[in-house]
Length: 415
Image (cartoon, rainbow, N blue to C red; front, side):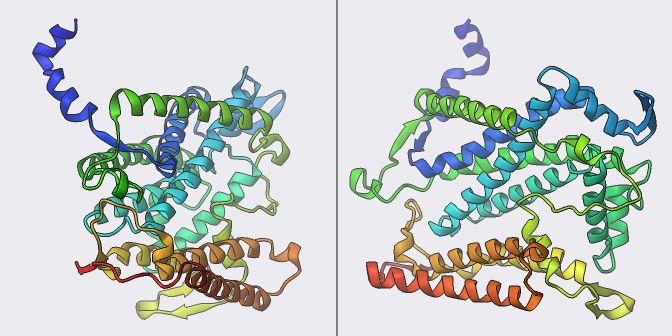
């Protein structure tokens, strides 16, 4: 049978060219694979959910009560054997994928692997993180309970706050002022079709570029195999390790999903005229925290009658500036070495300190999301955010200098 296929598809040449590709071995490289495993799990569990979900807000009768069809279909999913567990696994896999993609980007950042010639994959990785967050957010509205309707309504308000194009953006995404009869079908199509297709294409491009350029090597490879690729072939060694890791991932995520059932919609009930107090999931709460400490009446006039309000500044402008800096980073840091090897964080104290300062900023803005519970004013929280970020930078920078000394001069050429 192999010979039959080999004569027609030239499998022997394919095996030699691709399946024997050397993959570098380092524990940090498996973080990216975990993001891929989470995506596969999301697709598989998502198929089950689509078989039983109705993307509509039409009213249906359930046990004598009139409920939106989307809300009622999620109740039906939870009533199926292992239905609530699979929905919970879908929810937690989304969080794991976002966390793994973010940590993977941090590893690229702190090791300098974003530099020439790997700028393209750095851009693709940033796009992957953005698409993953957008896909997760569009899943917010689908249960159509009081929580998700309120959270999605906030997203609609953020979309409309974009100067000049806000109304158009919100019309495209939500099909009108949320919620309308078109909102759930529109968001549903984005969540189960368009964003997953974009994620598949972007993941494929990411892996294709990675295979073409090869992994950056860990620093110990300089001594073990100087000038050569230190790793294992895709088949069978890398495939075995990836399979074991995938099975371990499934075991962990099903344990989490079965122990902590995600988002029990019965607690919130169907949407009502009252607006419940909601906080977004962990990966967006830092944006929510920024909105909490920006004056709600802040408005900056723009030409042609447009306005930048607090919603736009806190949820679009500030994250957009961080994203722009990330995009420009390979062009700002033009120093390069032989980029076959990862750079040690201790030999690049400024970059390492900036990375930790960014983490401090994200942690403290996340804490600002609990402004009311903490009993702190906006001014106090701004002082904590700015002060902790600056202090983290100084502590990390001088700790590296004192412990490891100033980095020696390297053969760094201008790009």
